[in-house]
Length: 88
Image (tube, rainbow, N blue to C red; front, top):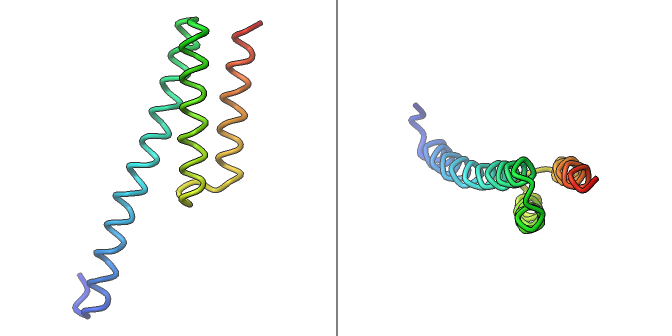
C-alpha cells in the first residue's frame, strides 16, 4: 500500500477506471452472448435486433477506449459472419 499521497490518489483513480471499464466489457460480452443465443434459437427478428444492439455496444466501447478499434472490428466481423451463416 503506498504511503505517498499522490500514489494513493493514483490507486483510487485506477480502481475507478477499472470498475468503469469492467462494466463496459461486461456489457459487450452480454450483447454478444444475447446475439449468439438468438442465433441458436433461430429467430431472425431477434437476431437482427440483438446484432444491432451488439454492434452499437461494441462501437461505444471502442469509442471510449475500452476496446481497441481493431478488436472491436474483429468482434463485429465474427458476429456478422455468424449472423450471415444463419441466413443460409
